[in-house]
Image 1 (cartoon, one colour):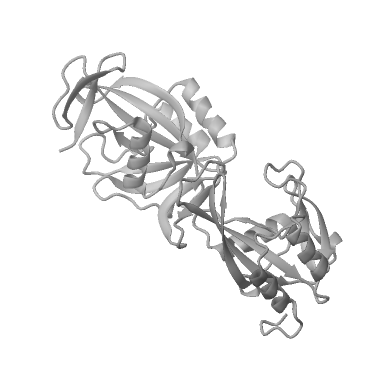
Image 2: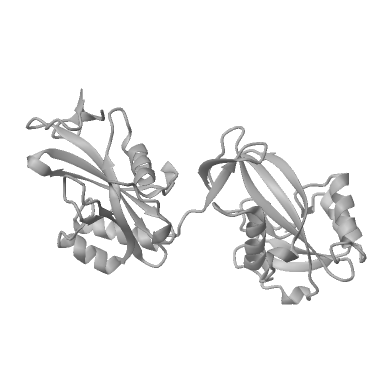
Length: 351
């Protein structure tokens, strides 16, 4: 049996609870949540209420539901989103948009906390909750607002300020999410918002690519002086694997973004995994090797990320890695031995 906390008309907890199915007394209110999800295409994610629902069956809405007794509204928004759609969100991702005071079925009062979320995914990937949700679709923002104002879509709130906040959310950059792993490299099933600290024992996945040419040189890029971490430092291209990516997929994407080099996953050869610990958490770094013969001037630098590219001889590269002038993820004897083996012309991988 689900219990609700009871609030007074000012939104203050009364200290009382009651079963969800029991009608509220006059002057009593409960708390609910809605999550408005927008994507980079300027669309809003809507779900179709099940025909089995007691209230407003068959209506399109933004996902949400009631806040359980003892539950904070943001946590309830995360839970309801997961239960109704299978979409996992980090609490910090949710942007509070507004609180609405209203009356529902049989004039029962409720407060609605509305949150916003930036996320890009195909509607058909949502895992719909049986008995609660019958369908899902993306709706253009203008059409969504028009239908919400007309009462054809349940949106949580309906003021000009609310719709303006949703539009501002749609125009804001989406936060990057990372999967969380344990020290053994096993996925925990949890997500992490990039830029926030990991807990002890938590690790994120990253990749770096050691790029060789036929002369045995190694290509490095120079990090922008605007970067918060290791500004103006030479490095082997790479970065974090985003949520849902393998390290190999992340390596292919980061390589393309930072250098313009397009490589297939089959071209990258795994060298080793490095486990590192930093002030903001742990990292599992997978290092790959790639053979490419291009001039440094042909590298397409990523604005705000990379400002130069250069080929280093193997000996100079190793010396600078040991001296901390080039970041490669590690500087162990095993690592340098493997790099030299991959750089050899007769390497079994075709190098």
